[in-house]
Amino acid sequence: MLRGILTVGGWTMASRLLGFLRDILIAALAGAGPVADAFFVANRLPNLFRRLFGEGAFNAAFVPAFSSLLQREGADSAKTFAQETIAVMAFWLLALTLLCMVAMPVIMLGFAPGFADEPEKFTLTVELARIAFPYMPLICLTALLSGILNGLDRFAAAAAAPVLYNLVSIACMLWLVPFVPSVGHALAWGVSASGVVQLALLYIAVRRAGMRLYLPRPRLTPRIRALLRKMGPGVLGAGITQVNMSVDVIIATLLPAGTAAILYYADRVAQLPLGVIGVAVGTALLPRLSRAVAAAEQGGDANAPNATLNQAISYALVLTLPAAIALIAVGAPIIDVLFRRGAFTAETVIPTAQALAAYAAGLPAFVLLKILAPAFFARGDTATPVRVGLWCIALNLALNVALMHPLQHMGPPLASSLSNWANVIALAAILLRRGHMSLTRPLLLDIARMAAAALLMAAVLWALQRHAYAPFAADPALRWLGLALLVGGGMATYGAAVTALGLLKPAQLLTRLRRPRN
Image 1 (cartoon, helix red, strand yellow):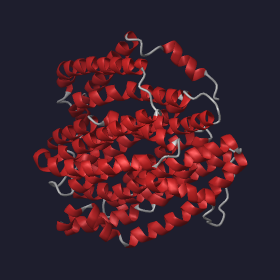
Image 2: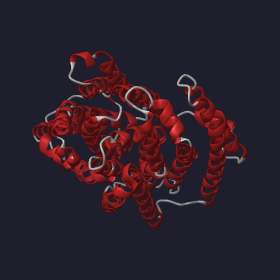
Image 3: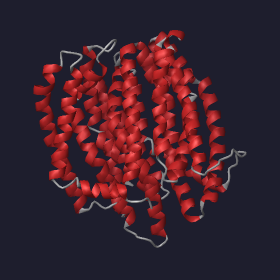
Image 4: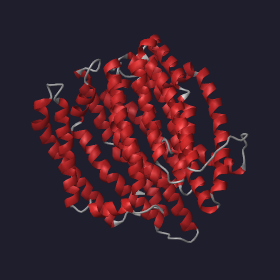
């Protein structure tokens, strides 16, 4: 599992770094103005569908079923199931896309109610959403092919696909802007074009993996009906974080102009550890946990599923805790170095850093949800996360309404963080009660050591911010050097602390990486 996590995490890191370059260009060209607000809200819609129907509900239902078929009936049966799924998904995704394109003005009235009082911004948002929305069916089919590859324990191509998203977006900003009305239009066209490129890459990868897939006539076979039954509740269960973030966007449109853009930039920085760690661990965990559960049901090691889950929690938190604390401690220098140029002014740095701190407070919860949800999905239970998730959506909405005026731009991200912590606590309690999770003494001791190392790192970062970053802050050319000193000092401190506390054992790590796949 560790090698799978590192493969997904490595490619995701490359994608996030390119994403930062993309966001730096957006900040310089659009800042936190009306075009940026319109594009970020418009782009959120196809990405919400992608994360719910593609990465969320689909993977939650498809990967365990596909992995179980491989384990029990072999590759031919799994291939037939994959082809049936592609046919049905392609049909209803196309229908949904056409419906949403026609109804986009009505959808945006609900998705961005605060823009309704600004006709020009609202019209621009609808236009950009229509340009970008074809990305949804393309990337959902890409996620389907990714699920096939993940079920085959092949993670590299699926993890590399988002790199193309950022490359295409950057290319459109650099070369398409002179030919379209605004940078927002260039970005929206780049979103849809990247969906075509990613789908092509994954199709080639699946064929090279030995799955030569063909598109049959869509039919609701018994296996497809079972998949859809599991996928239906999973639409909210697997994508609850994204639903909460969409509530944040809706509330942001009711706050002062520029709030949607501020939340976007803060979220993009917070998404680096969430994507690199949370997505990587969740992606590598689900097929492995599904096989462990299937083997246990056939008389294998009954403790293997719980051991696999605890291992994933340990791998995730050893990186997530320091990331969260670092973003809280030195968020302002990070935002300042990454984005302050062009249309992104110094006045926007502080509110963006405050929003980042609010998101960072929930980072461990966001990552743990990526681990706890597969513990239900691997056993075919997609209903329980939905029931818990619905309560958490209601909690998030209530917290947003309560915090939006006193905390302004910090209200939506803080509400999202608190509701996700409530989600984690509820899911963990259910797993513990069912015996599907065990908080062993070694795991709890490891978490305590991680927290101690992360707090020591925070103290060092605060000192470095004052004495190593501040002298360079006034010079745009030297700010990068100051940030490098902060990042390097924090990483060195945490690395030394976890090694001294016995959490990181280089020899054991190398042994696991060299171990052949099962």
